[in-house]
Image (tube, rainbow, N blue to C red; front, side, top):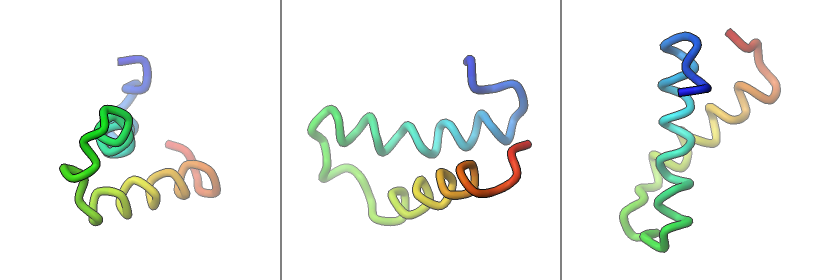
Length: 52
């Protein structure tokens, strides 16, 4: 809950952390390509874009 000071950051944290946690748990078959692409886009937005 530390990331959720507004709803956009909370959704982005969930979109990024979900595939990461699946991969760390060894359940890489459960991770879809679209979720990985979406997580990477969200990370690029926060690294190079305007933070809310």
